Image 1 (cartoon, rainbow, N blue to C red):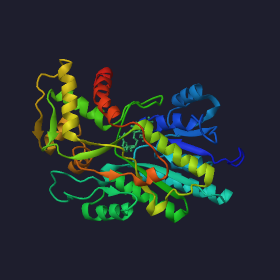
Image 2 (cartoon, rainbow, N blue to C red):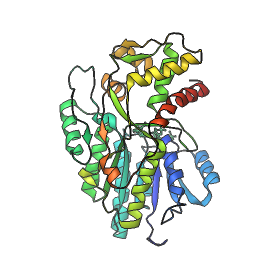
Image 3 (tube, rainbow, N blue to C red):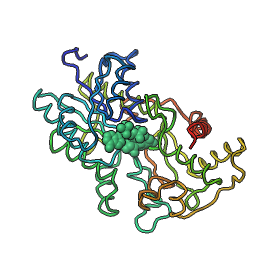
Image 4 (cartoon, helix red, strand yellow):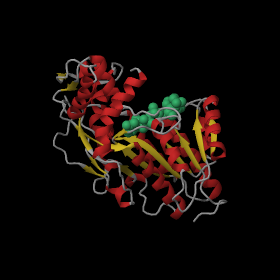
Length: 363
Ligand SMILES: NC(=O)c1ccc[n+]([C@@H]2O[C@H](COP(=O)([O-])OP(=O)(O)OC[C@H]3O[C@@H](n4cnc5c(N)ncnc54)[C@H](OP(=O)(O)O)[C@@H]3O)[C@@H](O)[C@H]2O)c1
């Protein structure tokens, strides 16, 4: 067990977000753990939000305010004071993540100890379009993080298909970590669901957007036949995975946690089809008397973008993020002892809950 003086210092980014806010609660809840995590530093924007964080969590958080992703100097300086960085901000700004890794490398040079970067990514990186012109992988086997070389696969995709922001950045994280001697672990998540427990954003991205689209369109719609299949994970189960990894690092130097090119792991715990989830949301809205027509409409890419409010996105980004096919097996996390407990029951409840949440938000 690490003593207080040698205990690795943890920096979390994205604490105002859905994933980061939930992870903070789980990191600080150490009731059943061998080692307590006393303090977590949080890099965030907005002095008002830093004040709210401090008034809620007291001395257990150390808020560090910066301007934004482009505030590279402050980013490097913050990471240089820590041994483990957990990054949960948006996954398209490579320079800000590389700055965090550079800061960690400075920390390693100063202390002589290992440093870790835990990066949040998403499985749209490895999804394929179901109605694609051009690149597709119809019929591909499920990607297994213990058996498949995910790094090589993503590198190949970048070459064949062209850059995809979140994937380009993820690969840059791995490469920069290898170059600077910083251990990196990428946690690549599927659709995350469930109510987050952070102080600010408590809602995920895809399902609320889909529920809101069904409501605004006054009719459920899917791309093509809506046959694409994705995986899901509950936000609480996911937060437990992050904490499990952090504890492994603190308690036994990260033994068994893969890093670098091998350190890209999945967190899936169930599967859904876009058609089923869209139908489910339509049924809930219909029962509430808010949707007269619940027959699912099949649309093309440009209509799908309009319905989802994704007019600004390229066809590729829109199609990889929604109604694509992405099947992953989270073998590594399970081999580390991850035991997600929110299963099909929770997923079924989510369809109802997410519609309620979107209605409550007025979207
Ligand atoms: N939710 C999912 O289902 C899911 C699944 C897989 C992967 N992911 C990926 O995980 C990441 C986080 O997801 P999330 O659902 O937690 O998103 P979120 O709730 O929107 O949180 C995003 C975080 O990024 C910060 N941020 C955004 N722009 C910034 C900027 N210019 N400078 C500094 N900070 C900035 C936000 O801070 P402010 O509050 O200051 O804006 C917030 O803390 C995203 O990259 C997402 O694509 C999400």
